[in-house]
Length: 292
Image 1 (cartoon, helix red, strand yellow):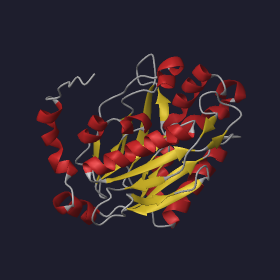
Image 2 (image 1 turned 60 degrees about the horizontal axis):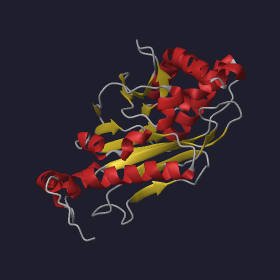
Image 3 (image 1 turned 180 degrees about the vertical axis):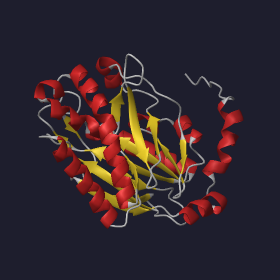
């Protein structure tokens, strides 16, 4: 499959038509390059709060409710565009109040034939815990698609090996991200690359990038798109299939070859995915050796 992963700048939206035109342009550009799977970043939907004015967009609590209330209409737009362009889309994640008093961080997944599902973030960052008070959502999922098996680890989730291991049947794991500092970008990137190594699969990272003057929550973001693989047979020796340019808006494109994934899992120079279970007795046998 050909993947397009975004370095996405947030906009100040004048009206709904402005948002619709922006998303339609991004989808059209990627589909025009032959991409079959499009990945938008974590919290990309926060720009929807500007439709209610800067007083709402720059108020953390008000912005959470504002975005959540607009997601049905945003999802209908993404569903239509996925169908019209014949592509799979992971939409930018959003705070969603789904029957609870606090929101979850949810990314919706759209297929060309009209199917819609979602993945919730599992583990919250410090800022999401306080002051956002965003909570963990439902369990991890593996989306079985016509392209292959696809999983999603939203930003911080990509930094946890056991969450990655739960998606070890996936051909591709998506890592939509929102990070303020360069160090945050690299934490998610290194996590994504580690998950590709452990699971002998392809991972795709999308990032918010740029500065806004209207949001406490996502005012400064740093990143770029990237597509990663195990540095082994059939893949680049660096493990980097493709990467964008830091803080430069646009799509990064790369191929995920399912035959290459199957081959490296069966006959790679190393077999991390197959040998995962050999850790179990070893990590329980740690002893202290006092040398002081």
